[in-house]
Length: 231
Image (cartoon, rainbow, N blue to C red; front, side):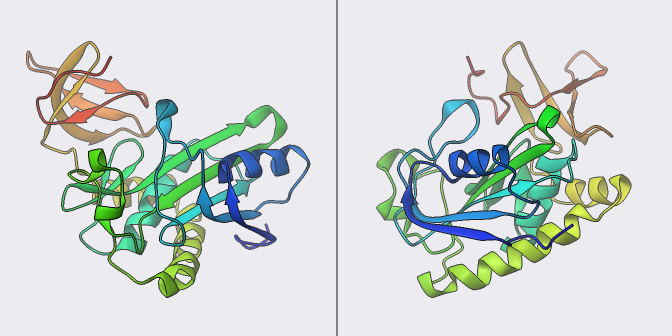
């Protein structure tokens, strides 16, 4: 496989780097193709949420991958936490936290029947939290770096992704579990609640149920704490 990050398309502004990467993948772009943007107008996360970041202060990137893995979201989360530092944790299924606040979001999309996946990552490298929409001030955070550190941070992230993709399943799960923000914490989802108990061998969230026993959740809506369940 070619190195991650080559070839690279950089856009001053776009709707979504994932949209561009998906088009490139459908047109035959090779494994490792990287799309980056200084700003995006319609960046999205899971379940239709938007990803907001001031121009030139966050990493906004998508990678075309042809070495497909059902563990791709876990791979990405491990790589991002390693890029962010020892204190970074993973909130299953796709958020990376610092001090309990979101510093990064991950969105994996793909068409296995066509042999490609697109991995989108937004990472708050140099944002000022006060520049984000007011509704994010209490839940978002930043690495606190400067705009000129975006490119070095990107290169670190690409290296960590390369290393994480090379891990066997056992090592990957161990690395992920070491960063698990939900272990031992109350979680609530549509239809139930319990206490986080790690991930199983397929990357599903394991939850200990109040009446005893466990259940495993596929990537759905899970909340820290005891707030209302998601719709």
